[in-house]
Image (cartoon, helix red, strand yellow):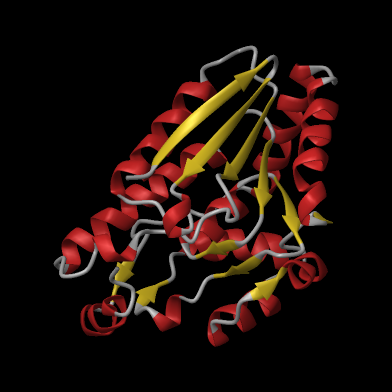
Length: 240
């Protein structure tokens, strides 16, 4: 069974997504652990930067769809609402949040990466949101995150085709800030964390707050919903 846990060092924290056998997919309990970890960290006045990272070779392949197989639509929608709460909790952290992305970064995992302020991405990464292949209706909140990162045209192409991006493609369209060799990703992310931690913390926090106020997320009264027939058929292919 996977888990989400926090590693602390002076001035910064790292949130680990730990389910490497299943490409770090997150089940319901793990999304809850992620939400609570982010909420606890948000109350720490000494925190300066947070890194979100997957254990092993992948960031996260998103929601554990095998957990949703056979569930009624109302239960699936509730599960996705809880996922969105966890992602929003990470997005709402008052300090810079960096996603260290390698391997699979799909579905809810891609949304989580986009909710981070910065994305340092490995050349081995595979990023995408194939919602149309799963009968999942895109929320306005996630559409906003996509458009902020890559613009409406690239976001539409990605969603209409279900295409998976390479790390280099993600960099080209703005979904990544930096492209790294897999062997250098850890070092470069830690170097960035050290650089951010060395600055005046109140100025950095205010910078994040001010930028957030300018771009402000849209409201969304229905974060997710699924097509009952399409989702039921599609999710069977992902049962373990």
